[in-house]
Image 1 (cartoon, rainbow, N blue to C red):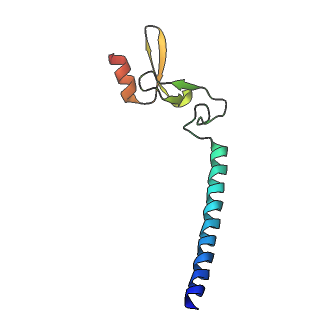
Image 2: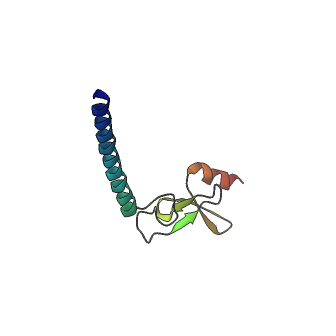
Length: 91
């Protein structure tokens, strides 16, 4: 009789945990949809219409408003970090 009671308790505990995890996952995905997934170009920007620019050194996309920039040979390039900007200016 004890094993049956223990099995029933485990069943309900797992069911409760699963329900809470599904709720948490649903709320997380809803908040990602509102804020945008930063791994996808043009979705991680603060404004939905903000332009994403390509860092020529490392190849990552950065929102134009937060990108560092430098001019060389009349061209403006945008960078994700000071390290990438320095590499570009040296090379």
